[in-house]
Image 1 (cartoon, protein in one colour):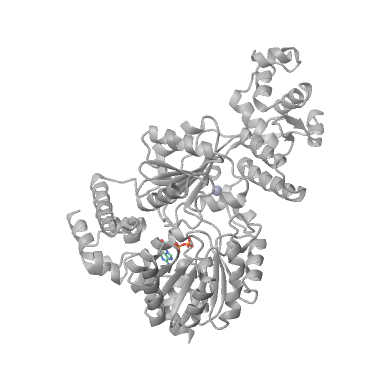
Image 2: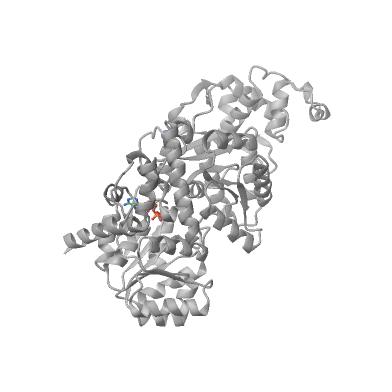
Length: 600
Ligand code: ADP
Ligand code: ZN
């Protein structure tokens, strides 16, 4: 039995989707669901969750029903399936009555193989009745973490999806999410009645993403430098904390000649969906956004995710950076961070009206985030460990590629601590550094701080070195930040001030390389012929995409074009062997791409 299911699944993978082998646990999951079982799937973004329900739906009689929270994105998912020759449709509020009736008819007729539905639509009695009178292959609940009341993507309608278990006891259900933590996992199993279902947990590593944290100095300039050096003409996301900063940064990037658009919850719905659609469809657009942007964005060729502000938790950070490089090509997760970020986030926590218990958790999350920024250890090891996974140093993060030096900072730290103490434990880093460097600012004169015994005793270090040192003291808990950004001593300071304990700090020597600058990406070429052929392939793809009004990646992903560039297939048969070229796409686009390849 299962040998045939596996064979059939592989047939579909090759002929419909054009891929040669399953990734990770895809084969096991597909077998489980195709044979009628339930499943809970935890897989990182880009891991290949869609095939886990699409292939079983194609193998089983009837139509697979996919619950997805974002109606704006259903259209592209359906377009991608249709390109592969799969009968797919969606039901949501954007359809006219006539269009919806047409979809309903094809569902009843049994011609539809995949139907995407928004949860609120699915749960209305009429729709449930329609499903009850049709043959259903399976229910797939995408972004299943939306049932979690504690998560940031909570959708009340998701909770009611437990009805499906009662009303359709014989239809297999598969829930999928990229949120890894134990608590969310349990909530999903509990609320969706999947406690008896096997859990398929994948590694959450994303080896193609290069993690880099840079000291914040002049963030806009640093961003521009990063973009110009590594990602010219590439699609990417820049995250900022506030709406205002989103607007300002997008405007500024545009002035610098970079195609950038803003996205945040304060914009009207129309411009929001318009900007989102442009990001999905156009090549090389930079989306400057708050965390409101991103869930369900399955654009495969996002080459970088940049953070201009410190995220509030590692969970959020990992989810946001995970939007880069779904196509497995080299990508960057790049962040600038400074002490001011810590001060701001601490302030936000203290001033919120949340209960103390929540504040305590938020503080812990922020501390873990800080630990990530300042630890002298492989970034990926820290991230994976946070999600309960052990791993080796990755050789693809700034720390691995450019290990920081450690230096004995005991004396310098004593100077800093005593400056904090003598000035009354209420000043922020900038003023404290001015004292250490012996500067004569109005504030120094006003406070009479030129008379402190530590005034000017820190001239052996630069301003940047002092900033880095103070940040590390905060990150390691030696120094505290109060709600107004003032630095304060903690108990951990005593042995240091008494000279009983030495302090090691890390020193970064040079700006590390990012993924685009040192690895081969679609945008770096060995010679002009490659560059021209690449441009011609993209041009062909763009023309086909525009003709049909679909995103370019729906025709072929970057990874597929890149393989064409490498292997230069000269016949339809050879083109068939390129990953991502299935039967239908070969038929539709084979000759056009061959013509381009033969010319190149
Ligand atoms: P997720 O939903 O888990 O974020 P997707 O299902 O969107 O990931 O898949 C990410 C990318 O990987 C897509 O471009 C998809 O076509 C591709 N992909 C998925 N499975 C395979 C496979 N077995 N072989 C090659 N490419 C795959
Ligand atoms: Zn590493």
